[in-house]
Length: 342
Image (tube, rainbow, N blue to C red; front, side, top):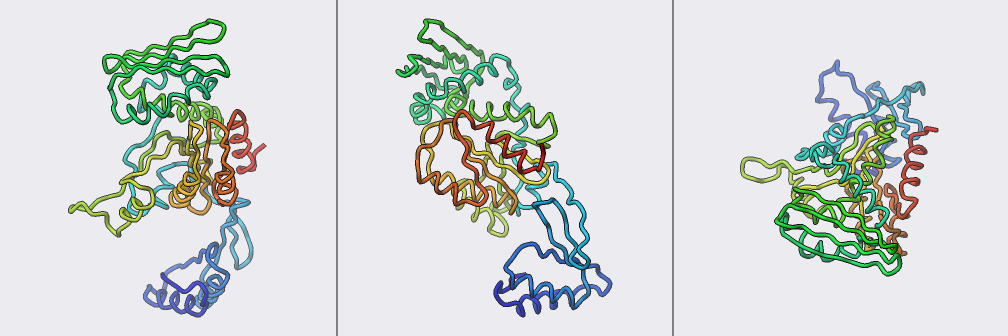
């Protein structure tokens, strides 16, 4: 129902008019958790009028409070990402499940070793991001050969893709030691090098929490698309609304998981450049897909220096800004404090 949130009589009347159209023996419950105080007053008055059941979700204690007698019971956990999307994503569907095993090569021990090595050399690999993003990210299978030397650590990293599929990373340290990683079939190697590796590293770092049950469902690269009708239009106009907000016909979420209570959306930023608009976008995405209890995490591989970004993150109700070498310690602490676990 569309109501005036500052007119309790308007709220009460519209609810009662709606109930008058329902069967006389129907069982009615009133969720009085959200809205303005005047909406609450109007809705509670309507509830009392028809002798319905008012209740309130106390998310801090994961309880439902029955407002007739103040009895409580535990809320049910939501253990599936799909359930969150169904609850909050009007006219949306999951177009890509985002399961880790969807790309079998992710479990290649050599690839895992490279991913972990790139975290250790995150400031070194960042010197290649711009050229990779500008020239090769959107050209899978396009050959390239790039190198960058980091003066501070005196470390050189060389990357290449040959014959459209053969990928190689060579790392030369100041002590003269050389480490090489070679792969026979990796056409989208550029996308991995320019940030995909950080998403995979984040997933691997969170995997023990999933195995321990702290995280109940976790995805990487999950895509949510807008449903179209036979004429190619999005019903209810929701597709146009969201594509305007998010900038595309679908939304890819870097890392998504649930602890049973909240949907977490992690946006991974591997480079030095972190903009205030990233915070605003993540705030909108998290609120839309995760509801009022959704939590967005802007995970920065390198600690953001911008005071503007830090300020916007501090002002955002549902976004945490985490970055640098303590990123995963901070993320784990957030999870345990949010879930009330020890």
